[in-house]
View 1 (cartoon, helix red, strand yellow):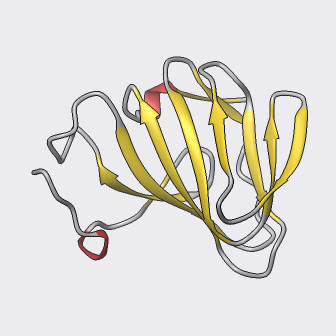
View 2 (view 1 turned 180 degrees about the vertical axis):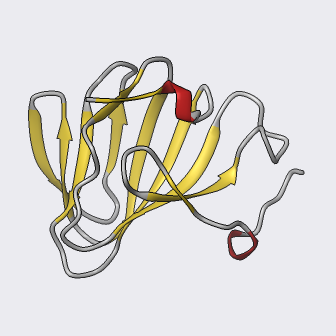
Length: 119
């Protein structure tokens, strides 16, 4: 499948504690070398510190505000911000706002639960 419709894709809970909706993933779509998902973090929630052994990840904030932890660094994020997360880099994000924090997540190679290591 070359096109997906967000409203037809059910969300699920990831190992880091956020909910995620796989918008394009090799298990369900024609994408082969990457995946694109929308993740949500409720107000006041922080995802579990984790890393991906293989995947390079990009977060693009589309709604809400938060604090990103990337390695030893922490910094605020808001809509329009994009964050590169190299493979093996510990990361977590906290929703510091009052609205749900929404993030587009691109992973290459594609996201896999078994590539996620909780720290």
